[in-house]
Length: 204
Image 1 (cartoon, rainbow, N blue to C red):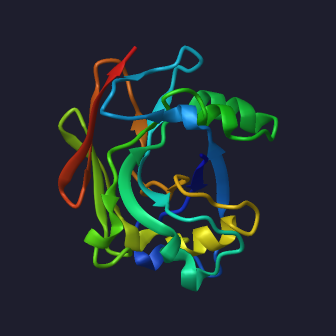
Image 2: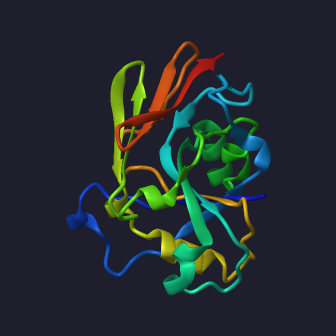
Image 3: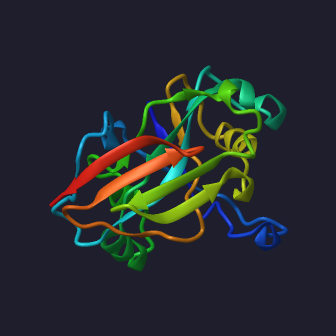
């Protein structure tokens, strides 16, 4: 199983939508980043600046290679809400040497994720609301219509390079505003269409 993320995939308003689009930023995360069942997140010793990024997560339901945009959604059957934690200081050090994002996003527990819901519950994949609260305060608000690259485009693009298999997860990007650092004692609650699906504590 592989976790596929896309960076810088949201704008604040539809008026900000780029034309032409920039090339999508794709990265992968190992399965060991998954944190399920609302387990507490422990800030890794390798970082002093870990930032939250709330995202919609989509689960691949059937194998595919060179998938077209037209058939892409037939390869997805579930959606969840997730946090893509990023060790910002580790990322900055890597960028100085033009290095990859792997360590900054791939440490153990870096992907807390809720249980999945059937995608059939959502009438329009481009009309999904999600949000993140930090210690009871709303810090991120997202809407899938503000994605630069829509899910079918992401699936079609990625599947040109790698075969997608059942159980693979696509993290579709975080809202363009509101990202911030966590500290020990924080409590994060992520919602999907107003329903709290992910709630966990942060440990030092």
